[in-house]
Amino acid sequence: MAQVYFHCSSSREVRIDRSGEAVSDLTEARERAACIVRSMIMGRDAEDWRDWVVHVNDDFDDELFVLPFAFVLGKPH
Image 1 (tube, rainbow, N blue to C red):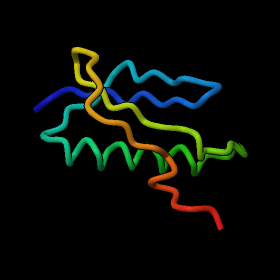
Image 2: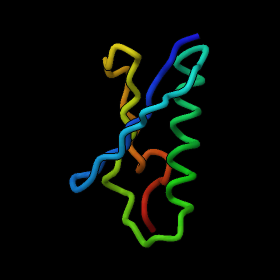
Image 3: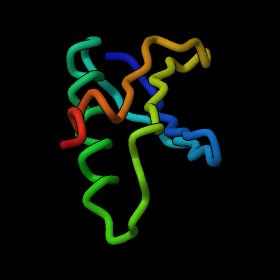
């Protein structure tokens, strides 16, 4: 198990994950990051989420990977 943090950012804003979550591997961390993206885009605001990314960091604050929201959202029609 590893503690990872899911920080979200755009060119205008940064949302820091202060509590993190325990995950067993990078696959689980990627699935959790995708769930975070889906929960944020389902919110009531009219935010354009295409330039947002999730930065997944370990407990040493080293970046493990980045998941662009656009990867989860797909291409606009």
